[in-house]
Each structure stands twice: as structure tokens, then as C-alpha cells.
Image 1: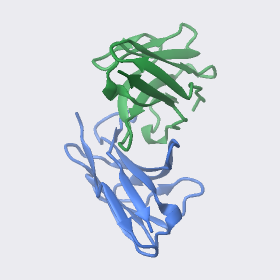
Image 2 (image 1 turned 90 degrees about the vertical axis):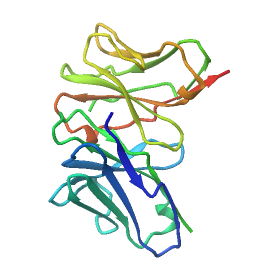
Image 3 (image 1 turned 180 degrees about the vertical axis):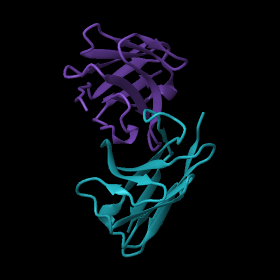
Length: 117
Length: 112
């Protein structure tokens, strides 16, 4: 089946630093990728929709200057948490929708656990 | 998207069938029922989806009631590795999959 990878799988950083998380579709092209965050024992919350070659669409309440998204190619989207603080500690998950598939299809990455000290 | 209601947790004995219910009483005629699961500290995994007919694949079976107001995901022979949070989602045809609203899901614990 289709594979989506995320890197790094976990990261610990100091407060005030920026962290970049990569989401790659390994065997398919994805015009659209999605970024979610998940707090412990909570469900996934959609943060933004990343579109190749255009600006990301952010969900209400998500700061676009805080969570920078770049989708420069059909197989890579990046999420940069700028000036991270302890409250940004979370599990970040991406998913990708194949360009050739229906809108129904999405494949999830394994997630990135961020801990901000 | 229609709202779904699932029990917060369930236990199942290893080797037995796990039946996970989902209520979606406000489902519209063009909305599919999707099931995903999330094993601890991993990304969600697609399981199965259906519109009104029962569906079966290598992972599970999906039984949708005739009025489509509820459904049941069946794992026929649960293993310890099936311990996970199971999410039931409904969404219309040809809509952006990423916009799906994940509820709280059901935490299934398979016990030896």
C-alpha cells in the first residue's frame, strides 16, 4: 500500500527554537497533504491543508505564522513550528492524498512527537 | 459532516470477535461510513468504509443497518496487536478526506 513517512519521528528542543517536520509520500505524488496535532488521550485535530505550489489553508484558531507550512514538491510537505514553547509539545501527524486518487483517499504518516523543554 | 457516537472503551478476549458500534443517526444519504484505527503513538490506519451495503476486507467487516443510522465494525479474531483507538467517521461523497472530523473513538483493549 501507499507509504507516507515523517521525519524526525521524535524531537526534543529548547523553548524558543524552531523545529521542522517533514512529511513525504514515498511511492505516490500528493498534491494535497494535511497536518494534524494530537494531545495525549485526545483525538486528531486538523491544523492545515497543504497544497503543492500554493499557500496552505489553516483551520480556525491555528496561527499561520507559528506553524509554517511549505509544500514545494508533489512528494514533500514541511511543517515548521517557529519559536516553539512547551505548550506546542504534541504529536504531529501528516496525511497525503494521492494526486491520481479520489478525494476519499488519504494515507497517514507515523507521526512526530515534539517535546519542547 | 455528521456527528458520530462511540463508546469510550471496550475489552475483548484474544481470538474472539470484537464488535465496535457506532451511532450516526444524522447521516445523510450521500455520506459514507469510514473506520480508522490508531495504535498507540502511531498515525491512523484506514480499515474499511461503506455506504449502505455490508463490506468485508482482509482486516474487518462493516455492518451498516438498513436505516444507516448505526454501524458495527467487526474484527473476527482479535489479536493483541488490534489494541488501538478505533474511529468511526462519516463524510459526504467526493469531499476532502483530510477534512474528516475525528471524534474521541473507542479504545479497544484485547486481553490474553
